[in-house]
Length: 142
Ligand SMILES: [Zn+2]
Image (cartoon, rainbow, N blue to C red):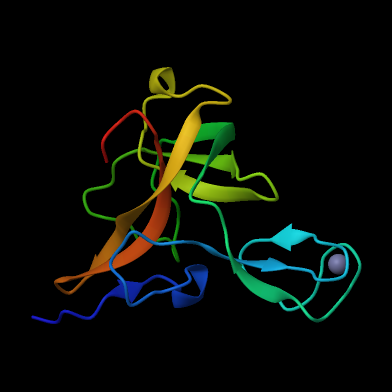
């Protein structure tokens, strides 16, 4: 059994070797201070090409959300059997991040609610979990 921590994309987080807690890896432009996620080499606002890799805040507020009620087509891979999951945009202050949500009950979600970053299993490859990030309501234990 491997103890290697696998991510859907290791570039998403600052320290992919750590099982958690993790920080998302964003890009900040030193020229105009625009922040982007995921990391990208060029600034979406001014075209600057000296983007710095920065750790994004691990808490924010829910800006928009929906619930994915049916299994997406490939290349989507999920934990079997499929269960509906929440997706949303979380406002981290400098940047809005599209994310899975740990809650799939719309009645348990509301705009502006406080959210925190967590790690979830995106899918299982063989018997190895492959991780991704998600946001959970702050008042609910993950
Ligand atoms: Zn810029």
